[in-house]
Image (cartoon, rainbow, N blue to C red):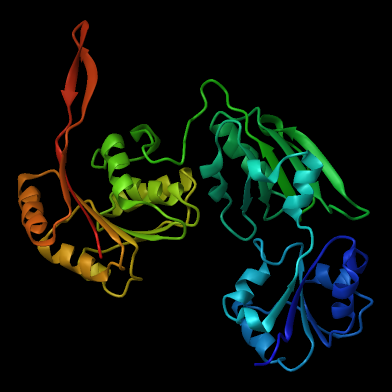
Length: 400
């Protein structure tokens, strides 16, 4: 079997001088070097054919394959496998064909500048991604290191923090770390006004005011945090539903009859890179779902206009399915057929007719059948009493 032909090299602001002797020799011996303008400038003394990132970027793999047989080097910033191009290449080219040469990356450098333990913080990227993704990580006493997408990003994040009662959060922008032009900007979210370089790393130490919005990633957010028309899976039932759906890293949920999207939103918040497709025929509810996804930090929620089971045809097979509306035997069977092995399927029913369908499905498929009765304390005159919500019958199954 042929050995690696492609070298992916992490390089810092100190350029070739910051590489180990062995890695520097690899770069200096390259026949083809691929990278951005900044990367090429950091290794400008090397004589090799130079190639910029292709457009569209997805053409990168074909570009690299076209030069197989030559000494090919891809230059990346810092650690090529940490929110960087190395991961993208590694999904299409076998690891046996690649040698990675990691360098100390922006996260390690920023943690060192801040004196923060890497084990006690969250690392995020909004570089080339929706900035709203960081909202899900705004929590009291949380430390965040964020790769930004441009000079305006710290100001946007300062706005998110301030709007949620975290205006006293301490923010630090670090740029050109490890190089002669390294620069640092410090301030508070509520008064952030620095003009910063476009390529930067942001450190945030979240500080919550007494009235700050508490939005843990454990399911069960307050109903008041969602836009809705009253028809939604309420807080306590939603928490029980997500517990049965079992959100996992990178897993895909179908939220059938998603309404305001509360279950899909909380699924995506609960696990890193969790994905969701919300199927909803009513346009006003799709608007609610989109707004909730943006406000609560999961802008990648995909919302589909359609009615199950027809709208399910051709969708990527899911790891979990929630049927919150439009239940029928046909919808259930279409969902059950599409569900991956070890997939979780949860159905909630409020009406007697839907409960009857669940009883029949439980008899045929098994699973866990429970009745959820929730009551909330509310004023009755000058006293307090319990106001019960409509009971919810819930069927939960795991596909074996």
